[in-house]
Image (cartoon, rainbow, N blue to C red):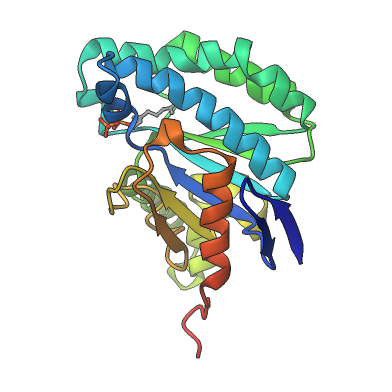
Length: 249
Ligand code: FPP
């Protein structure tokens, strides 16, 4: 049993999810409420991400996957896309040192092609700097789309069958999972135990459709920039009340 201090009372948690995945939604609305441009919300969203990552690391979470940019987000106004693409650069200078101190390892999933070079370079530097860290894995889903990920896996499998490296009979769920981008995560933690979406929206939006088959979902009205350690504890507390049966009884 893990006991954690919350502002009002202690919270007892029997289980900490190994893999938490978050759809960080509501940055734009958060900014609008403050009569600020949308990008102001993304900046505040980075602060929230830093707090939540360190809180998750303190709790012993193994993997935190965050949906930072989807393949559909390119349709946003160009200035906003440019701003979001520059966030990893700022993230590297301002936030990575503290994460590194906390033994956090940074990895990225998503289609790297199409990302601007400075964005890729900043992510690569973060990955390289933290690659020997043994603590929480912070997994950025950047230019990620779940259907594209599955489509790509099907293509690779088809090619391997064509080249006689694989028989159709060898295709199992485990084999398919090995062709997905989350294969780079530790085997036991590839699938999220808990998926959190902020800002009151109740959709998966093409986020980890294969990996979420048995995930628990937690939706909150809180806008992402306001999501903090307390909010994370609340989500995990709710997760502790769920009875996961994985299709059994
Ligand atoms: C969704 O809110 C948020 C995003 C599309 C961007 C999220 C990115 C971050 C929090 C920073 C990530 C950090 C790095 C280093 C990449 P929204 O704009 O859809 O909000 P709205 O629904 O209120 O308009």
